[in-house]
Amino acid sequence: MTRREAMGTAALAAAGAAAAREAGAEAAAGPLALIVSLRVRPGREAEFLRLLLPVLDAMRHEPGFLNAVLHRDPEDPARFMLYETWADRRDLVEVQMRRPYRAPYEARLPELLDAPREVRIWRPLRADFAHFAPAGAVPP
Image (cartoon, rainbow, N blue to C red; front, side, top):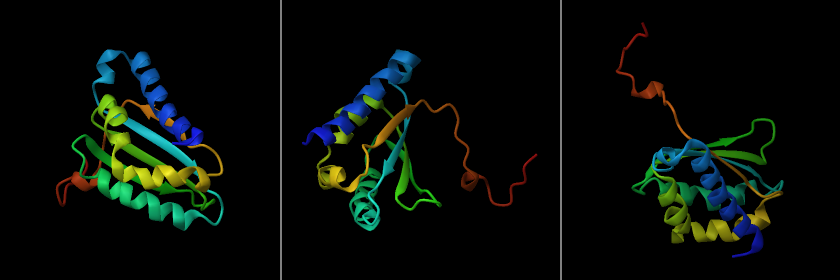
């Protein structure tokens, strides 16, 4: 693992620890959301997506995985944002981030990014999804 890769993983672990301290031990054991901002080198977007999409496909089958949404900046095609929700911070940092299917993505990420990824951890309070509403339901 290169220094830059270690910085990304260390940032995730540090952000998780900080979030747990700020929210208290109860939040550390519950679900968490990650917002990962990535600035890809211009012209390398397709290569980045070829490496990331299989990771997202594999994550979907993990027991602690709740959801993920990949976003792309409509004004800058080299900027991406990944929103992930996981059931448990400790499992994410100690187990999920070390899964072998992540290795090709993590190994190539430093050469694909213009700057280190930024990881922020949030504690979900509420989730609303329109697609879970019964067919024909009308809001009150």
